[in-house]
Length: 475
Image (cartoon, rainbow, N blue to C red; front, top):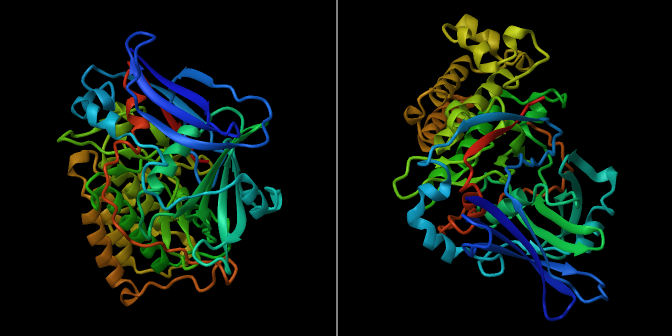
């Protein structure tokens, strides 16, 4: 059995544009009829005098690493995994009862409701000063992220700042993540999820242009602040507020809808801060639809970031929402200590964060030794210990005994109440211009059937007899 992806550029009647169909299916023999699940994106074709031709390409589907908002240049670490048995060889085989509904409900962007705007490449080129390096705020193997300015879609008399992620035009590296992010952020909305404003998909003589347009998050990522890139230290109360915001975002994805989304790459570099220091989850390129119909897990190729990925997920490829919970526990210790999960620049016995903190948790005097020294003693030690206790519950080896994010949210809420009388001290000065937009978005639950939205990451794993881990090493 083989998993295939068909990519076809189909000309439309006006001979000036074409439609890109991305079809994911599996077949036992070459030539079998595909399942019929496909996504449809409209690609504008500019000034083409010759008659358009249909181009079709088939290739084995492979897992690709995450494209983060920070576009970091982390190195990939590929690790051979064990062979999956016939019972969990794929998401699709374990969810055979939903095959028909999956095929029937696979919708194109043009067919489903979305608040996303389809930008032209010309608009984004103007907004970013022709993608000048002077406005570049991130760069990596998949392309770059640029700061830009456009007119507000609500009020054309006002201008707003945006962040534009441009994928490399060479090949389709990162395309699956690009499609997933458009689909996920186009249908979910929450104040603690970064807002995707729109996308651009155009083809020209130089290749396919694929861009995503986000609300601008002026205070960058939590990792940036914890890694001493900025002189200003995140106050303790702000860190607790960030933990609360991140928990709100994850709880929404896991439990607030009639479908479940597993983030799968939760880490400090994927938590961005707006001009009011509100934390929002970003980079949904690796997001997966959670198990359904009473299933306990989703079986998939292992991707993510070393130091954050749950041990059972690394060992078996079995993914659940409790995998995100483990990552959240690691993140809490980052907030407490100011250290990365893995840091090869530290002494050998301090390189692994979780191993380093373990012997310091028994009493207050030892516990103070793991507190971020940049806080200069300005923290509530009891609140810090309580936050560490929450982290420990998230980091239980037995995944089933880890708490749900809604339970974790309740625990952190109590800690917030004891921190500065429940009114967290936010950083008094933003790193952004004074007129930067808040961009909170509206908290609105959109209950929709999501098999068709993240379906391309279900069927495409269906015939893998072995999987390879694809984890990103933190620097």
